[in-house]
Amino acid sequence: MTGLSDVRDLMRGALASLFGFGGRLVARAMLMVLAGRAFGIEALGHLGQIAAITEIAAALCVLGLKRSLLDMLSLDAKNGKAPERRIVEALAISLCASLIVSTLLFFAWPIIYPQSHSVLPFLFFAVPGIVFMEVALSAVKFKRIIKWDVWTRGIAEPWGFLAIAFGFYVSGTADSNHLIMAYTGSIFIGAVCASIGLVHTYRLGPLVFSKPRLSSFPAILKQSAPVGLTDMGNMMLRRIDLVVLSVFVGPQGVGLYYMVQQLATIPQRVNALFEPMMSPIIARLHNAVDGKAISAHLIGVCRWVFIIQLGITIPMVVFGDMFLSLFGPEFVVGGLVLATILFADIIDGSFITAETPLVYAKPRIPPFLLALTLLIEVIAIAVLSKYWGVQGAAFGFLLAIITLSVLRLYMLKKHLGIQVIGASYLAPLGIGGLIGGGLLLGRYWFDLAPSLWIITCIIIALAAFSYLIRSFALTKTDRILLRNWSKRRIRTVRP
Image 1 (cartoon, rainbow, N blue to C red):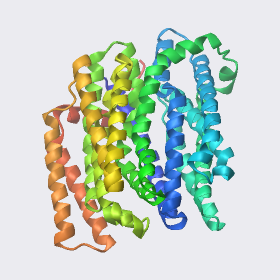
Image 2 (cartoon, one colour):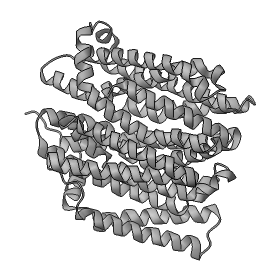
Image 3 (tube, one colour):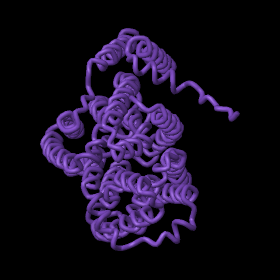
């Protein structure tokens, strides 16, 4: 990885995101315990179905501006143009699209979820809320300011969800509709936080008086369309399994799968620690035509994500059924489902960043790959879940993720000459296998049952994994970069 300032920004962003990740993790864990035990597995199944459709629709309406806006703003900055007009244009066009889609969904919700009449007004504004939040935070991240992303996604949204759901539980109205109302309420809270961040970053005056031009809309749509299809495909890849699964199993099966997905987001969020800074950095380097720096950043980040995610995943696989039991006895049977999805998330989380350079350099390729993968996923889940239920859906998801990752890495090598996977992955894999074997031995040989012993084993395993990685798996470049990044900036004194 080259460019120490970029490395510092990546690490600064990752550390800031880690704070938000911790806050989100605690809130989401408490929410899932509350939802599983107080609202019930069926309510969780209804929420999963509603959330999947809402978030797929929002991904469509964002129009790819989550990433393409960074490229546009980077190009505008290169040409000396102020960013405010472009930001307002992006918000206007995406919000118009979201209102159109929300209107269509307004008539579809009673068919999809017959009990939705009391929550229709909340669902109508859910898609615009997500769209505004995504575009506004993307504009803020262009300035390499990460704190508003952290506050929105790590604090405001998850804790708002928990607070509203807990309020319904205390009032004695814990049912499916109230859980959905808590979900939509958290979206509104997140949108408000994102709007504060946008105004704080760019100021209200320049945004209000930026004079957006309707003539710019077609150009924005044309530039964003491939990225929009890619982002929507990525969202569908993570949500379509819930929609397809709901056709073959009841709300209880969907609730189990959704709960497993929520638990699996713990290691999956590792990639999100680097993404807020990675996208603007690659956008800038793409406009600077610096392919060597892009390659170095990408190879380093993919490997770091793989190592961190592997360390978190191993204890979750070994003790998966015990973790799931915290949410209620009916979730214990999902241990194998959790292990399957965790394995898929290691592959996807480690190499999803490989898509970003393709989005900027070869924008037609990622949508094609995702369309092919979604076709495979839908067919695989439909066939496998028909015979093996929730476990079949997990295997279908794994098959789709493996296919997509192999195709991404192949296209990255073919078109940009970037080889992500190398011999440097062997040492982390060996260490991970060793730690996993030790945990399995500790669980079944010593018959661990008390929670204290399990927590102790996990802490020891993580410490051992970290020590072995630091001793045997860091490359020479890793050590140089970590040493340079940890040094304080040397202040220059004017003569």
